[in-house]
Image (cartoon, rainbow, N blue to C red; front, side):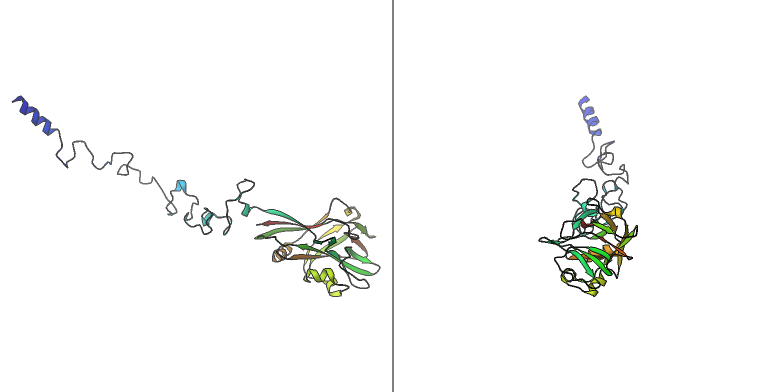
Length: 279
């Protein structure tokens, strides 16, 4: 009799197969590690609906899955579309492709011949071996000078600044100051360098589009410190168009009398352009 009572009590305390035991939860909703009724509805907010939770979204507000140049940077946050944003040689946090770089290009030289010189408006014969860059008026003849820069192997997506730096070898003027201006040159570089007396070339070195100017004095003469001409946006545009080829500029004095000279003959002198650009 006592044994039968024990069996009844035991049976009442067990759930039948498929029926939850008293206080049990077959849905696991009370399990903090499972998603259920007790889980926060905003545990993984995704404001831009790109499948990446806000907490790990690489490019908030844009679709992280869109990466046209496959550089792991979503298009919406890509600083250099079409280029790899990952290289950062100086490790400053700015991709190389978005960081301004500086390139210095000296006047072209072939053998011992610098591609610099002058063209006169009369009574003077120019040849490729003459590297004298007299600029101004001498004995009634007006001289404009030129400088050729090779851009072979130079690539850039954007040119932001161009400076022309010239060493002043001599200053010969009764005026305390002389204004020298820099001009675009449309004549091919080989023609400028190798042609004898040619009025059209002479004129081209001092007309057209002016890129910039600066004021020179006797104190400008220096073997260590060149005079800098900051050239305008048109110069940057024209230089970019010449990438892979050659860029030529002309220099003239804006008023007579007097002249300056950036080189006397074939000696080495500072004549260069300094370009800031994005690769």
